[in-house]
Each structure stands twice: as C-alpha cells, then as structure tokens.
Length: 199
Image (tube, rainbow, N blue to C red; front, side):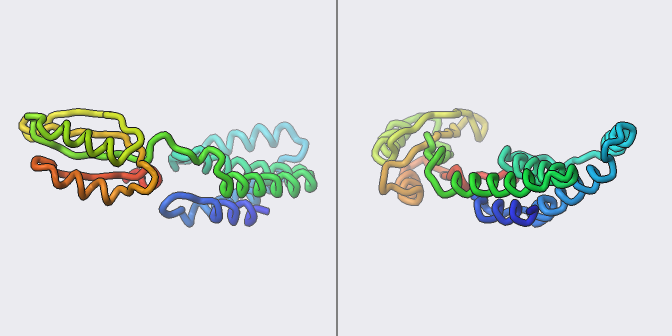
C-alpha cells in the first residue's frame, strides 16, 4: 500500500523532478509507523516512551509543497491503521486517497491560474520604452500587473517585474523576442509558473 501511494505520487507529480529519497520515504514510513504501533500496543507507558524517543529526532527536511506533506501524512496514517490491525481501513483509505489524487491530477479542477508567469527586464531610467513595453504586453497578454520596480546600475536603469497571463495562442518566446527589440531592454527573462523552482 505504501508503494501504491508512492506510485500515485510519481504519476501525479507536476514539477521538474522529484526526489528519489522522498519516494523511498513514502514507502518506508508506513512500515516504520506500523512497527511503532505494534510495539506500543495498548501500553500507555510505551506510548509515552515512544513519544520521547521520536522527540529526540530532528527532521531538517524542509517540505515546501503542501501536497508532499499530505502524501507523507497518508503514508503515516496507513502505517497507523495497519499497526492497529485496522486492515480494512488501511486498504480502503489507501485506495480512496490514490483515486482522489489521480482525479485531481487528471481533471482541470483548480488548474486555472490568474497569471502564467513573471516577466523581468530592465530599461533606461528615462522611461521612454515603458509605454512601448506596456503596448507589447497589451498585445500579447490578457492580463498583466506591475509587481516590482527598482533602480539598478547606480540608478541609471530601472528593473521591472510583471506578472503576466498570455492570450490564447501567444507564447513566452514571442513576447521575449518582441521585448528584446526595445532599444534599451536588457536582461529580458520570462519565468513560467510551473517551472519556477527554488535554487
């Protein structure tokens, strides 16, 4: 059942790459939890001792995606149910979790985004190209929003960050090519929402 949760995670993952160690943890955590539950049984003293032992462990892995956290909880809940001999709950709970995760992955539920990504560039401080830039954004985007403005290069240039939502049929490549034609445009960069990762 832990393998089923891990397999569901792999098939519904939307990022650039997943961690092999995280997949292994999804498979191993229900086994460890079931062993702990079997060891504790109905003994309160053992339960308190297990809590003390677990509190000594420090998990330093930072889980940034709430979805990953729920997969971990699913594995732990599976182990708890199996360790408490509630095998029917463990089996049907695992199946229900996997089915709902696949349905959410396959359907457009909550897939619609208000913005597709970020456009970053810097222009001369004179601001002559800003109007031309916003004209290009109006032509290519159904919605855009100026997120950040800051001075760079000792105040000679201004760095702009826009959130953008492309019109149907428009692509980030087309926008970058058009923006690069502005006389003072430099460091033009579009980061699409699904490819934004922490480095």
